[in-house]
Image (cartoon, rainbow, N blue to C red):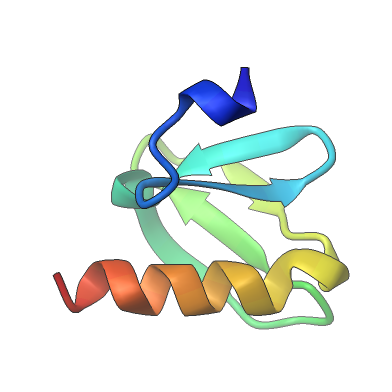
Length: 63
């Protein structure tokens, strides 16, 4: 199902989680870090997925 989601808006942050970039409220630094979503959900970012998340989020913010 991941391939059906728009790649410019959704990103995999962990083997168990794909998130919508528009729902990120906050990013907390760490080895992988954590994201806090607008609904208050806190999710761990896998360290190997951190760089892609930050890159994609930065590009999304510039839109």
